[in-house]
Length: 120
Ligand SMILES: [Zn+2]
Ligand SMILES: [Zn+2]
Image (cartoon, rainbow, N blue to C red; front, side, top):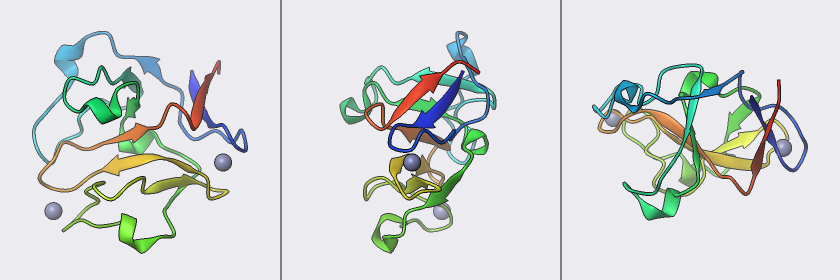
């Protein structure tokens, strides 16, 4: 499966399969939360506001830029994602939030209202 931006249908992820073995998730700070090539749907246990969001590895995001609003791009050495969505597709549509600062596990949480799965 791939993910596309709902607004312009641009592909925004590499080919992904759902991760079934949740033991492969790494919750350590500064590490990739999910291995490359996989996605999970957030069950909302950690943060109810991201329930239903699609979680992927930062390296699996393609055709994407950082938000043009610099106030969304805070962080000490990466992006902390605390100020709203910080990633957009190449056509500037908001798609989700990259969390990549040193004090958090690294991943991208894509908003299910703004993206869709397509068969690849
Ligand atoms: Zn778009
Ligand atoms: Zn940092």
